[in-house]
Length: 511
Image (tube, rainbow, N blue to C red; front, side, top):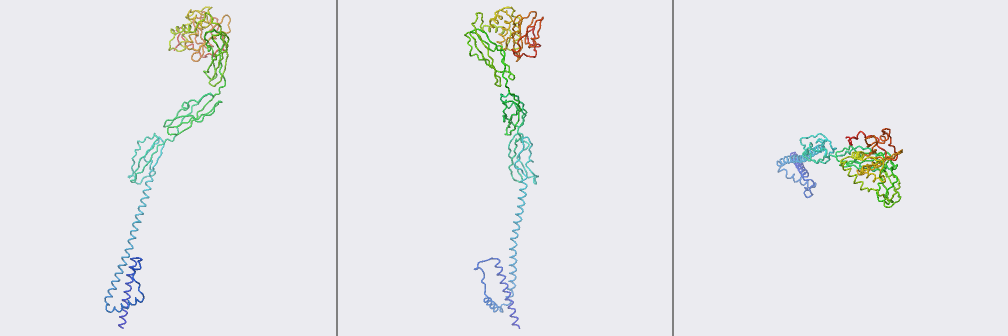
C-alpha cells in the first residue's frame, strides 16, 4: 500500500515537472519567434521521454523534498514570464494610440489653418474711382483677428489712377502676397455734333465733331466707319474714342450732305475797247455768284490777246464752285492805236495815292476809307458838262488834277482810289435814259453791295454813300428821278440799310 502511494506521489511530481518544462519552452518560442532549427530545443522521442521519466523516477526517491520546491519555483517563474509577456504587448498599443492621436490633432490643425488662410483674398480688382479697404481682402470673419497684419495703408491709395499694388497680409504667422488691381474698364463717352457738308467736302477734323467727352484719362479720336455721301443725303459717321488705357467707344456724328450740281453764275462781263500798249483790268465789273459757294473761283484766259497789236481777241472767263461745277463766259477785246491824250496807269496811281495819303489812315476800315473817297470827290471836284472821256485813265487823271469832271470823270476818280485801297467796285450805267447817260459807283463792303454817287446834283448839297438798290431807286429830289439801271446785270445789293451809321456832315462812320 505504501509503495503504491509512493509511486503515485512520484508520478505526480514527474507530471508537474513536465508541465513546467512545457511552459518554459512555450515562453521561449513566443520571445524569439520562429528561430532557426539550430536554436530550437531538440524534440524528444517517446522513448527518450520514457527514458527521462525512468531516470527521474529512479532519482526521485533520494530528492523528494527538493522536487517539491522546484515545482513551486517553476510555477512562479511561469507566472512572471506571462506578466512580462502581457506588458510587452501593451506598450506597442500605447505607442500606436499616441501617434494616432497626434496624427488626428495635426490633421484637425491643418484643416483649421487651411480654412482660415483661405479667408484671405489674394487678388482684388476694382474700378477706378471706387473706394478700397482692407476688408475687401477677406471673404469671411477671421477666427484669430489678433494674428492679422497688413503692410499697406489703404487710406493713401490713389484710386483715380489705374495701377497694380502688391502688398503683404500676415495671418496665422503666414505671409501672403496680395495684389490690388485698380483698373479702368469704363470706355469714354461723348456726343456727336451734327455736321452740314456738301457732297464734295471732306469730313472735318473729328475733334471738332464730338463734344462733352468724359473719361478719367486723355482721350484720342479718329474717324471709324465713314459712309459714302457723294450723292447727298442724311448720314451718320462713326467717331472712335480711345482712352489712355485702351478702352474704346463709338460715337455717331449726324451728317446732312447737300449735293451741289448747279454751276456758278458769271455777271458783268462786257466787250472791251481799249488801246494797244495799255493794260486791261479784266475783272473790272465782273462778279461770280453761286447758290452755295460764297467765294467761287474765277479764272480768265487772255492767252490769245496781244496788247501791242491792234485787233479783236477772245477772252474766256471760267467760274468754278467748291463742288467742281463750272460755267464760262466769253468777251471780245478790241484794241486800237493809243491816242495822244492817253495817260499811263502809273501816272494816275501816283496822283490818286497822294490824295489818299491825306484823307485816309492805315487803321481805317474799308467802309471808313470808302466814305472819305466819295466825300473828297464830291466836294473837291467841280462838275462840267463836257470833258475828255476817251479812256477811264484820262477821265480820272483830269478829275484828280484839274479838279473838274463830268459824271463819268467823278466815277472814274472814285474807282481809281477804291482800286488802290483794295475795295471791290464797278460802274453802273443809267438805263433807260432820256437826256444824258449817268454813271455812278457800286462798291462791295463787308460782303454786301451798295450804291455810291459823288456827282453833285443841282439843289442837293450832299452825296450818296452805301445806298441799297431799293433806297437809290426810290430817291426823288425836286421831281427828279434818275437812278434806273439793268438790275439783273449787276450783283444783288444789300437789303439792310446802313444810312443811320453815316455822318454825312462830318464824313464819318458813327460808332
